[in-house]
Length: 390
Image (cartoon, rainbow, N blue to C red; front, side):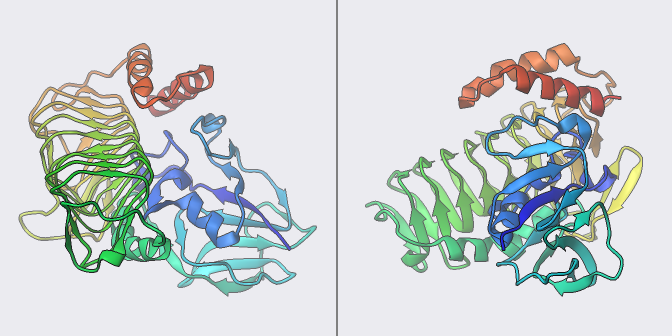
């Protein structure tokens, strides 16, 4: 029996900044795939709806199911937590309500045919499932190291020939090139994992691709060493990058190290923007989220940068820096550890970009990646601005 799939976002919390309020949490990337895509593979169907914050209703990105406020559903259905990245395929679900768990943590519910669901079910049958529990945005960095290699091994298949002039270190069978352009002088290093280039990817001479590494459709890799990263579609990357997630449509077109970081959509890093990913004490990283502290447990953690944020040339981001959605950093060379959403200048300045100014920038930026700014997109961006600046 087929089940409808619903994704349940968490309530807004410091651990989900800077993405809470600007996009559904299930639209973040865990390994090579979005959290939603992992649940869709797990259950074997496309998601019917995402239960998230009311102002995100009508979320306009292509391919995303309906976003709406949480409501009751009737089975057969699976309600998956956006704070869990499943592995593999779902087991057979019983004809009784079932609680999906991972190491004692509830990560979803299976609802039998005709039964209602509107929240936790007492005495539900327990089913242990495989995957990675995500305590916050910072755990997407750890998920790369746990999930990316296996994701890419499963996706290996037919590949275009490795171009003449490329250097391969390791097993060439762990390279998958799918209608991409690779210039001479590119190095593929598969000794620690596969390298997968999706359709339309451009790789220029002088780029070193060290697996596990995935580049989504139409990404441009224009130079430098790239390692253990998931680079979303229509992104441009140059310079050293390691253990970093790009959701897509991001621009890091110049030199500057970015490591153990998460970059949202439409992020633009100015030339020479550098992240620190290790404290001088070699201790674990604590996040400062506008006065709240989040203990990450990670020794290596760079920057968490929300959608539409931008940095000026030469910006230095300390270990565990959070840059809010829509922030525009250009005032100080070294940014504070927490930059609020839509900050204008950052650093010691407390100015905020206006809603009109933010929308005007989006009108200029999105068409550069062939994304139309229609009325639905404008309305969503305006609602997100209002919610994040309330």
